[in-house]
Image (cartoon, rainbow, N blue to C red; front, top):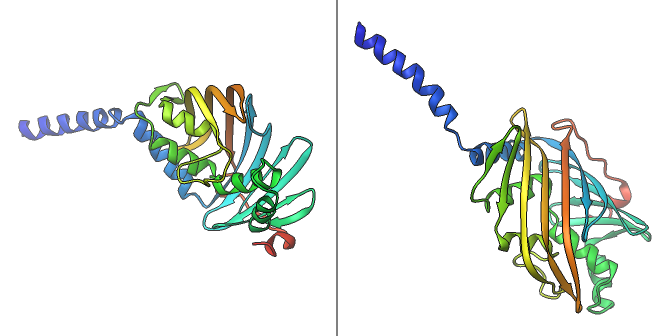
Length: 239
């Protein structure tokens, strides 16, 4: 009888200890996966410093369409994506990614708006995809309050400071990066990733011009499971 009571007491103590022993990195991965598995969600992104758009917003449905909009200089753009196809609305109306790629090719190898948009669409990832990719590269994650933070490796920071990714377009503009570094901070709400803050620093060279970058990208996620993506008929015709 005493042995059974002792075993039950030990077991009751062990379970909370095991739960408390969960690694912050595992908690973060689980929260990212929960967002990835959700039926839909919306997001807003704000970029401060360096290359990038000031503010943008988007919506995505699992196995469905993804839409996002942003401003580049004085022009506004809307993008609708599904699978590997995309339709982009700019000053000239809706066009497919393939049509923009052809325009960029016809214009040569210069850094045209068409080439930029084509490259951006090709490299686009939803917040859940970005977070999942980043989690796979994080070595140590620490938790402080509601925030999970990690320093990025120089190689990861370098990739994120440029427009190119591994396996990207060899004809894309070439960037050189010196002294890359960065960090990421994430917040979790009800077990789901709800906010990310990516801070990147480095000196980026393009066409002989050097620019010191100190960029912070903040993404807030909302309307998980209730978001709907509206696709205009003009965009459907280009997908």
